[in-house]
Length: 274
Ligand SMILES: NC(=O)c1ccc[n+]([C@@H]2O[C@H](COP(=O)([O-])OP(=O)(O)OC[C@H]3O[C@@H](n4cnc5c(N)ncnc54)[C@H](OP(=O)(O)O)[C@@H]3O)[C@@H](O)[C@H]2O)c1
Image (cartoon, rainbow, N blue to C red):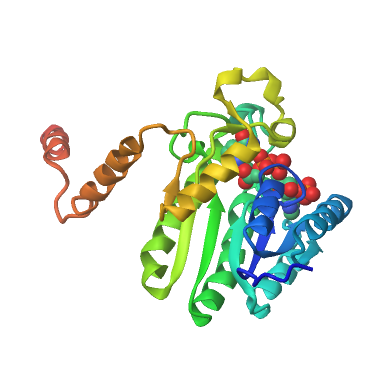
């Protein structure tokens, strides 16, 4: 066992492969104890054994299908009751590459339940507990499709737009209460995600694909730098800042008693014609 002090426990969903497994590795090496959540128990056991061995940290596994109500509530209970937990990485998610007309609505339903509902319920379990404990960190894995809506499947993009908007709202609400919230927007990352989504990663241009360790290291660097939104592939951060500033500047102009002038002219015409 490690003799160094724990940085607190990080609960990571979707830790059995890809981005989540790399978060587990990196957070253990940063001194966190871990609780790893996913469906594939043997993969979780293998990863936990390796990380205990290599880092000396305490690593528990919670095999759970976050699309199953009872399993999801079990993980919520862990977040509410385990007072060592100081970090939640909401990473479990599935994607889709097929457009609406070629997609099965039940598969879209499962995607929304995992990407949106499970992430929301876990956040609702963690956030009040973190506030009560005087602090904590929530990392939500979104995607660049949160702001690039025309890329990939529209339900996937919509689910990740939810993750970004939800994270921004939480940052606003929880910052004063000691809870940090970071949304991470990966571009294409070489993981099994693409096989599950129905488009093998080998079919993408190599120059747009990042390795999962590079993505996670960049996301943690962004967290260390105090970023609330981290887009690891975006070279010029001022482009995101300008985009976000434009959105915020518009916010005060979006709700008024009168419709905008351009609509008034049209409604006048309709009134005169009737
Ligand atoms: N790869 C990319 O290009 C990319 C880009 C942007 C964003 N992302 C996001 O990154 C996150 C991680 O994806 P990844 O690329 O690392 O893909 P991945 O290797 O397929 O990992 C997905 C993880 O989610 C878990 N998972 C899937 N369904 C689950 C369920 N019902 N209950 C519990 N766990 C479940 C999987 O484990 P089990 O199968 O063991 O349950 C696995 O550990 C996702 O939110 C994804 O949307 C990925």
